[in-house]
Image (cartoon, rainbow, N blue to C red):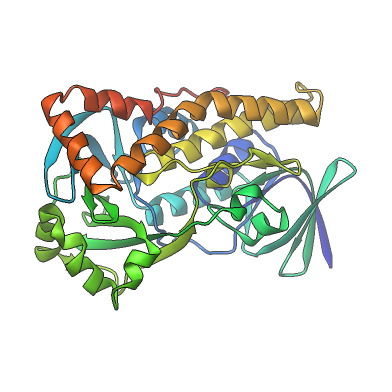
Amino acid sequence: MTNNSVDVVIVGGGLAGLASAIHLSKLGVPTLVIEKHTYPRHKVCGEYLSYEVVPYLNFLGIDLVALGAKKINRLLISTAKSKAIETQLPLGGYSISRHTLDYTLSEKVKANGGTIFHDTVLSIEFIQNSFKIKTKGNIEYQAKVVIGAFGKRSNLDASLDRFFLKKKSPLLAVKTYLKGDFPDDLVALHNFNGGYCGVSKVETNHMNVCYMTDFKSFQKFNNFNDFQQNVLCQNDYLKTIFENSEPVLSKPLTISQISFSSKNSVENHIMMCGDSAGMIHPLSGNGMSMAIHSAQMVSTLIEEYLLEKINSRSALEQMYVTMRRKAFKKRLIAGRYIAPFFGMNIFSELLMAGLQSFPKILPKIIEQTHGKLELPENPK
């Protein structure tokens, strides 16, 4: 078995893992990302980035405008019965595909001197103040710090006996791209019976159409087209989109067993980052930004720990837990309270009626699920 030693191992190469790797390698910290998939690839994701993380992305050397990202400043929400309201987004954001963004981040990691190894991590053990990581490729790594950025649900979660796995996760997410007309500056959230669908245009000028529903509701139909025609298209806005566009992908992408339960920020001394540390409901539209913001936090603290400015691992872990709680607790709670109203048709119609009567309330609700403009905490 090959043995390698590195300061930081990041398990998972999504947004959080790659952003952390860029940050740490930029500062000269020996960093390794272990990711089972190669780049570029499509992922099930709403592909909306709140503007709050743009200054940090600039610090990492990522220019969203140069990548062709669409600037989003309007939000349209509709109910299952096609009642709708539109508002300006208080901060705004960008829409960009994970295909482009993840690949760009991965190339920046390598340009900074970081390493990406494509393999599957089988186990992570904490022994005598260091980590032992074993992979499917029969390689063993030693690391001072491990960042867990392996996404929404992983076999590693089971090996760590994480509590959120004990709760049922009956949700299914489906994503496709469509070729058709849609405003560049708009993100839409269209509700349907049993779920909701986000729509925005990405840098390829294709529409990202990503919806979430209960798996049991989906199982009542034979295939995606039947579910689309009989459920999604009951919303007039979605019907118009599907009837006036063409699919780009040969078949939709899916993920299941999605959990919005609380997760610990640190498990067995592993610093959890991105979706591994918790997800905000997609209806709130800010998961990508939160993943990148969490990478900023964990990377800044790890640098200080390695420089012995933070004098113990326990202090490092507690500071991270506290920082994440301060940054995300309010918006995670807001997301959990907001989402159910759009899953219950009667309440969503009543809520829409209230928002139409008092339209200034909607931007205030959006602010509860988004952060403020974030400047880099360690701009070296």
